[in-house]
Amino acid sequence: MIKVENLHKHFGKLEVLKGISTNIQDGEVVAVIGPSGSGKSTFLRCINLLELPTDGRIMINGQDITDKSTNIMKVRQNVGMVFQHFHLFPHKTALQNLTYAPMKVKGLSKSEAEKTGLELLEKVGLSAKAHEYPNRLSGGQKQRVAIARALAMQPEVMLFDEPTSALDPEMVKEVLDVMKNLAHTGMTMAIVTHEMGFAREVADRVLFLDGGVLVEDSSPEEFFSNPKSERARDFLQKMI
Amino acid sequence: MNLDFQQFIPSLPYILKGIGVTLQIVSMAGILGFVLGIILSFFKISKFKFLGWIADAYTSVFRGTPLVLQLMLIYYGSPQLIGYKIDPSTAAVLSFGLNSAAYISEIIRAGILAVDKGQSEAAMALGVPYRPAMMDIILPQAMKNILPALMNEFITLTKESAIVTVIGVTDVMRRAYIVGGEKFSYFEPILIAGLIYYIMVMVLTVLGKGIERRMRRSD
Ligand SMILES: Nc1ncnc2c1ncn2[C@@H]1O[C@H](COP(=O)(O)OP(=O)(O)OP(=O)(O)O)[C@@H](O)[C@H]1O
Ligand SMILES: [Mg+2]
Image (tube, rainbow over the protein chains, first blue to last red):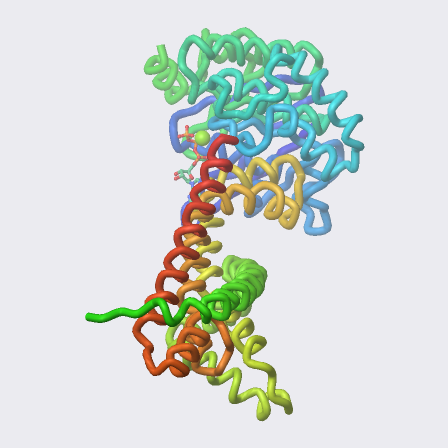
């Protein structure tokens, strides 16, 4: 379980997160929604410490990851992240992208790492592409490899920052389908997305951020059909 | 203009032997410069400002003074610096290596900074520590981009190496000069030396292009 308590983040003078508190249960899928610049990415990046919180606490399974004595690398191994622009390693094949970190960080043997790597590529429907370099893959395929790469570390939590925003429309579905399957396996997921249909269908809960404040924290039905705040109503109006 | 190459034919093998001397100095200096250049470039991007400051000062001094001066300083200064006189080719390797490290460190620094920030973030997000991320993810990509610039530096080094003549290393240049002295005619042997340098540079250029093409194929 992830517990976020009064999370603040400043970039210099700019306060980007203004005291966010929420919990994410094991196996829960949370959609993070909000206008551009509202702090969605920053919120997500605090959970794997790509950004260090200025104030407040984040607990993952009872461990305070914001504590100074925490091993940041260990935390990140346990929290996978998928980026808008994939960030696959271009000089490594799809399979090598998957095996690199498990071998380097967890000390898996090459054969072990390749075995799990191939299983994961199979799960995302890309067995045939195992030995291709990223530049030979379509956007949707790249993102599926990136998801498999994060999963290869066997994280307990997966973070997605607009995973389909950089994709051509016809490729969005294949990536969302992979995420949907992942959600059904009971993975704990936090997803920043502009895909309202997907959020409504797959998410257990919606977090609506605006101006660094968590304005709404509710079920998808409630959020989409009956948003409490003016700002969420405005936002939804513009999205549809 | 009367040129008489005939009389220099017997001396040709002697001059050509200088190629080995030149290549040896240049390749050893190249390796030294590359290794030291990588270290200096790490200093420059380090979060420890002090290291960056040292590397910047180093670069500034070696770029801000003539190479021939650095060469003579190391050669003639060695008795006072380390207590004994080093031999000329060691002095040549040292000064060229130290000098090109300054240039190479700038090339590598720029190459590292040009790699998309997303790459190191992706590595960090997987829990990969800084050092392996640098070695396995960032540097290989940086190297690919800076290969032409590195090759350029190596070619410059090959040409500039002719100045070892001033401390008496018998490289191509020096040998041509000696032969010229024996025959009281410098023009032809120096032309021959020029041709040799030009061919070496062309060979290096073609080699560099080949390696570049090879690396580009993988992406
Ligand atoms: N590293 C940084 N340094 C300074 N300011 C930053 C940094 N990262 C983000 N910001 C600022 O913080 C604010 C929130 O950014 P963030 O990326 O979290 O927003 P977002 O909700 O993800 O927006 P988008 O939908 O456009 O991705 C923005 O004003 C942004 O300019
Ligand atoms: Mg964002």
